[in-house]
Amino acid sequence: MNLEEQILSLKKRGFSQEQAEIIILMREAAVVLFCAFPESFLLYGGANLIFFHNSTRHSADLDLLTIAGEVPGAEEIGKILIGGLKPLADFFNIAAFEVKTLSSDPSLTKIRVMTNEGRSLFTVDLTRLGSVLVKEIEEQPVESASSGAVIKVKSASRDLLLLQKSEAFLLRKQIKVRDAYDIKVLTDAGARLHNTLLQHLEDNLRWQEIDKEQILERIGQVDARRCEAELSTVLSEEKFQDLKSKNFEPLRDVLLSLFANWL
Image (cartoon, rainbow, N blue to C red):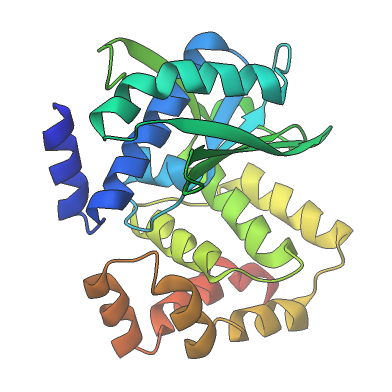
C-alpha cells in the first residue's frame, strides 16, 4: 500500500488523521532502528499491538527491549531517527523536527521525537532490563514507507505480550486502564498464557507478594471514572461509547478470567 492507502486503512480502524500519521512515523522509526541494529532490540508494547495485532488503541510510545549486541546511546539513536524519518516528515509537511533525550538512565533511554515548534509526535523507550523467552520472539517483515526496503523487525509474540501486559497491570505502582484494554485485545485475538508463561507470572507474583485481595482490588479500580479519563482520548468514539454503554464490564470480566488461577 502507498502512504495514502496506509493512512486510509488506519482511519478505517478508528484512528484520526493525525494519529495515523504518527503511527506511520513510528513504524518507520522501527524500520530505521532495526536496520541499523538488527539483533539488538525486541519490539513490544502498544506499538507492537497496533502494527501486528490490529489494536485500535492509539499509542505514541515505541517500546524496545534490548536483547543482544551493543546498546546504542541516546545521541546515536537520535541521529539515526532524524536522518531516517526526514522523507516522511517532508511528506507530512513537518518542516522540521528534532529529538530530545528525556532519560539516559542505564536501565532506560527515553527519547521524544517532536516538531521544532514543540509538538510531541512520539517517544522511543529503550529498556535494558527485562526477561525474554526466545521461543516467544517473532520476526515480522516491515516495509519502509520511504525507501520500500523490507526490514525484519523482532517483536514479542501475542502470548508474550499478554504476559507483559498481565505483569504491568498487577505490578505498576498505579494501574493503567490501557493495560486492561490491551489484555482484552490480545485475549480476543486468541492470546493465552501457556504453562511456561503462567509459571513466569506465578513466580513474579510470589516474589512481589501479590495476593488474591490485591488482585481483586486492582480489578475493582478499573471503574467507569478511571476508564473514561484514560480511554476517551485513545479510542475511537465508536469503540469508547460501546465500552461505556456496558459500564466497561468487559474489561473487568477479561481480567477476572485471566487471573482466575489466583482468585
